[in-house]
Image (tube, rainbow, N blue to C red):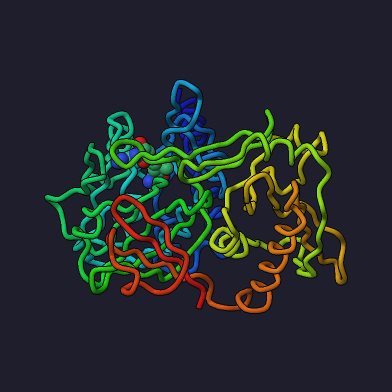
Length: 412
Ligand SMILES: C[S@@+](CC[C@H](N)C(=O)[O-])C[C@H]1O[C@@H](n2cnc3c(N)ncnc32)[C@H](O)[C@@H]1O
């Protein structure tokens, strides 16, 4: 009997050691990839037992640095709620720059992130997390209680209106993809406070750390990210124009398009232009993508299924979505690479339709401009002003007019 109990204890000890070892390995990997950059955030990752927040997922999945765990889907199988990937959480917590004693609101609850925020604010601080979905808040509450973070306040509500009774906040961390910034978020943020928000900008999403000063928000850092779309009052669908069963153009707003002309253009052989701009094999070009979405004429995101690439209809970059210049019955997009010196690759553009060659020329010119003037610079600055702020009171740049805000993007 005693032998049996000893063996059972041994087994239990092994099981409980495993999450600890996986957590240590995850932290190491996050450090190496540059997602973890500060000691307090690293410590939060070391101590929060993240597997307790997704008990149905295998441990390897809960601790995979780039793995998010889907916890709820809609009837079509689209993810409605996930426990975000550690790499995404690390980047955003670093952007948030939480200090001990702060008051923090998290929008979109999974539990893990709120627990890490609780570690960062310490005993004197305060964390509230809000989610529109009662199943999600119930799960988060359970995970927080089980892991010893029941001081976090969990609220079930549409975050369009923030959480007024706990306001104001020093930090608001949004963990769901939005198209606009509701006035409540600005109203409930202290002057000098930070809002971190995954904002959809013409088909690309960026996690932007924005600081509040003088009635506006100004970016301090911008990172690529991917999040499930917001539900409730702030929901806003993208518009997709299909040029073929496997190829679409995505836009933030409804646009009047010559779909027949664009479809015909897609079916004709393209004009090819080479930019002279080269990239390394592991290099990220999300900064170039944002530059192109804010400068190309009539920009939409060309997105294709693998079948269209296999058929030779579009180039490989379209698989993940690539900015396209669109004008009437013609369009151009970054479609190809070819080998260049020092194991680098040169970026090439295809233009389709009667004005395809002209658009392709414009496209490569914009790439060259980015390469010369912005590639090694500070990157885009994004300002968010209340809607209807007159042009003369905003910086000169690319302006996106939303229901509640004017989003201005410029490249210093
Ligand atoms: C990516 S998940 C949150 C991840 C989480 N913060 C974590 O720690 O892993 C996004 C969540 O946002 C929630 N959501 C969507 N629209 C919302 C809204 N209007 N108000 C509050 N929550 C919302 C979804 O229900 C979903 O649970």
